[in-house]
Length: 177
Image (tube, rainbow, N blue to C red; front, side, top):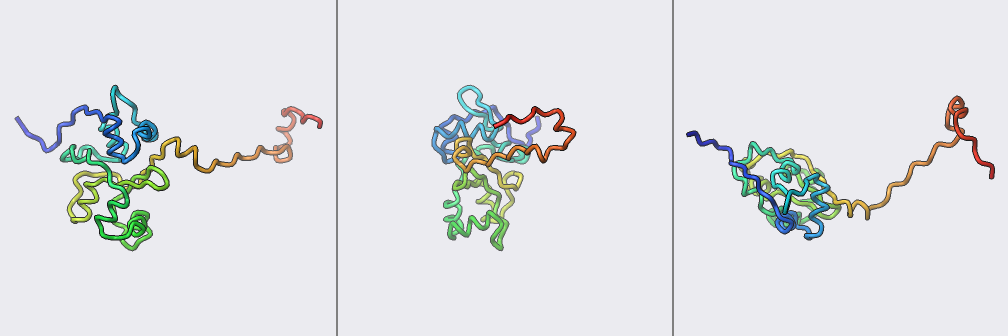
């Protein structure tokens, strides 16, 4: 019998409480976050595998799946690990700093930026990453946060003068005032 280096994935479900700790959000925000990530509810929770795929992880390259369940790090935690100001760490992650090598972040709103702990630890130590992940900054802003943002202005309807004359023949005549 052969032993492979690949982990044995089991259908593991994350409860709302687990996800609230993992994403560092309130329990009431978890369903909105999962909806923004397009991860459906299954029974009593949400499948970890779907969550990790939504976060851009290449599951084939993962050596230890339990490392992935470690709660995400907030920007201030990463700054503390690096021994620098939060503003400097934010500038690094946005590519505005001379050192642009920090691993990609995950946005959960305008003031919530999270990082995978295993990526940050490997990056600090200069070790290879324990898994591969799309190195693009992801954004999962729940619907409630989107509703509170500034509303988009509606595009004005074209006036009759801007419509070609051949089309005007088939339009309803304007109402008199």
